[in-house]
Each structure stands twice: as structure tokens, then as C-alpha cells.
Image 1: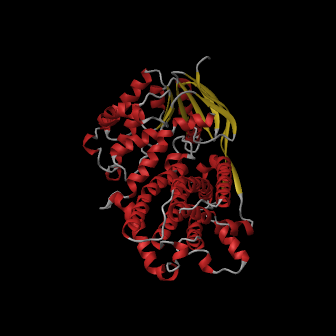
Image 2: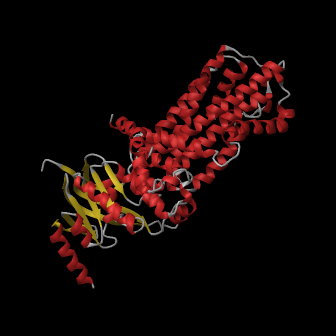
Image 3: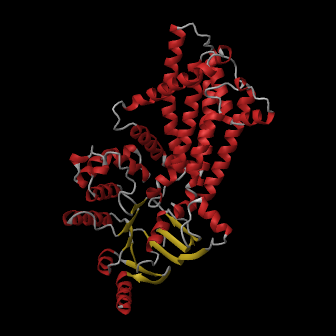
Length: 248
Length: 269
């Protein structure tokens, strides 16, 4: 147990939701005066507990709305848990919705540095990996074109290339292994696989038990924010498959 | 300590955002960076044309009306642009904040800083205009060593913008209305700050009105700036104290509000 990289300890996340999103003062005051300002408590995660040790690959299974994305956000440090604690070690590379950090008016090259900086890397560090990124994304001729003129596939490729050019300790994958065309997909899966070989710790979210069986050695199932199963990926995938059958 | 370490790690993000804002500001425009000089110069000409006859006559108080105007306008412009950008910064970077962990205060701060850099560059215009009047006309304006103290009002102004920017950014996340309200407030500020007039020329008899005018920290900053650059006299220490205290209070409030609320931002953007 010496090498716990991600330690999720009794984590609960509560969203206080208004029935409708109120983001202007007029509505706020009208609702306040007419006492329609009701808040709903919504627990996206309740008492989730798990540890991932170095080099382990954890699959997170669950139906839509089970709290998978919330869990990833908590691990990525974007969302603070309402209760419980979470400790992570080392560099976390979230591959969540690639290209979110791009500025559309910026050229591809400039965006590489911006995106890198967003992930906390220095200019020098990106300099060293720049050529590799461009080559992997296959966008050599487009690096001086503003990203707004890229196709969505090009954008995703560039995002994937930057995000994986670094050597993170923890890799968070949110169904991103479906970037670009079939050829690039194979290439990106190969890249992720080679990162696996480098003993990277992985948190992988998917609906597909086939993928989880293939990529992960441990898995958990989330259902309505609760962790209902955890163990080796084979066992957990079997449970999940029977759950899916049960609902059909 | 933890915070400093974190900021150190993300210092490149800070500089990248500053760089980005400056680079993108005039991209696709033919004159590019030149607009930084041209814009204040042209608005100065417009204001001289409109108000020159009304407020510019009083040579004793304004010494040199175009320079008097330019001082006020440059400071006002920086203040409003910087705070407005800082205000929108969190919502504008929502897509990043929702996906990756970044220290959020970097956004308002970097946006103020990028405007600060443009402001410093635009001070060259002031230098050129002053040089023109000193060399080619017999202006009443004097250049004294006090001009070296110009950094005092500038630093206070920068601090004020950071503080106000943090407060506005936090408020804007919850209520987008703040944007429109602040727009109106900035217009009010333009008239409430002695940019194109002098306070004496207004002949205000109502004491309360006068105090209200002087409570504006931009009034102190503009006065100090002019004391250094235009009048060449030592600054009024009361102005320094008042504006510096105001800026510090704003930074404390802004920092606290931002720190307390930053974890909730993601739920609202």
C-alpha cells in the first residue's frame, strides 16, 4: 500500500440546484420576493471510496447520470468535494473534452503553448516537445492557421497530441479514445497503450465493458452516485453486464 | 507558501494569457499595435475639439489642455478596460475552468496585467505629445524631476484595478447583469472624474457634492499623475494615502470574496 497515487476518501458531492438557473438579478429578486427561490439538494456522489496505486488502471462504469463525470472532475481537482477528501500525487493529465483550452483566434502553434501552460507546463518544456506534437497531430502545414479554421477532427487531434505529449503520473480518460478517423483512432490508442507501459496510473470512464476489460485491471461501478461494486475488472464487468441485461 | 508555490508553477499560464491578450487585441487590423498610440491620440483630439473652448481657456489651472486631457483619459481608459476585462475573464474561460484545474485568480490578474502593458506602451503617446509642446510651443507646462515619481500613482492604479477586477469577476459569475450595470457606472465615472474639466472650474458650492467627487479614488490618482507629469510639483500626500488605502482595501475585499467563492464558480459558468 506504499504507493497510493489517487486516494478518494468518503467523497460526496452535493449540487445545490435551483429549479431553473437564475443568473440575472431581475429574476433573482422576483423569485426572492415571490418566494419561488427553491433549491434542490442533489447528491451527485455519496461516500465514494477507493484508492488507485501506481500503475493501476481503474475503469469507472455506470449509466448516464451515475456521477462518472463528477467523479473525474473531483479527481482532476476542478470540483471540490462537499464532504470527504481527495489526495493525488504527481501530474494529472485530464483528457476531458479535448481542445477546451483553445483560443479560436489563436494559431495552432500559439495554442500549443497556451494549452501547455494551462496544464501547468513551462514554455521550455513545450519547446522540447513541440515537433513531436505537430508530427503526431499531422498538422504541420496548419500550425499558422487560426484554430477557428480547423475542422473539429483537426482540433481534437491537436488537443490529443498536446495532452499526451507530456509524461503524466495520472491519466484521466473520458471516452476520448474516439478521436478523429479510424486511422488516427488506432494511432491514439497505440499512444495511450504505450503510456500504459510506462507505468502510468489511469482513470478510465466508459460505457463499454469490452474496453474496460481490455484496458483496465480494476473497475468500479457507480449508480446514482453510490459505488455499488469494486474489484478486478473482470468481476466488475460481469456484474455490470448483468445489470445492463437486467434493465433491458 | 502553498499558494506561492502554486502560482510559481502556473506563472507560464499567467504570461501566456497576458501575451495572448496583447497579441490578439489588434490582430486582423491593418495598423495593428499602432492603434495603441492612435486611439488615445484621436480621442484626445476629439475632446480638445469639444471641450477646448469651455475648459481649456483657464491656462493657469490646466497649463496645457491637450496634455491635461491625455493624462486623465489614459488613466480612465486603463482603469475601465482592465476592470471590464477582468470582470468577464472567469466566464470567458469557463470552458477551461470546467475541465482542468487552474488557479482561477490567474485569469482576472492576467487580464488586468495585459491591459497594464498596453497602458504602459500608450504612455509613449503622452511622452510624444509632451515633447511636441515643450519643443515647438511656449507652453506653460514644466518638466521637473518629479516626473520620476510617476510610478507611484501608476502602481496604486494597478493595485486598484486588481482589487476591483477580482470583486467584479466574482460578482459577474453569479449575475451577468453586473456587466451592464458596470458599463453605466463607467460612463458615470467618466464624468465624475476630472478628465476634461478641473474641479475648481465647476464652482461647486455644495459641500456634499464636492466630497462625493473627491471620494473617487480615480480623482486622487489622476491628480497625482498630473502633479508628476504636467505640473511638476510634489504630490499631495493625502492623495497618496487615500488612494493607496482604497486600493489595498479593494484588494483585500476582492481577494477574500474571490477566495471564498471560487470553488462555486464551476457550478455557475
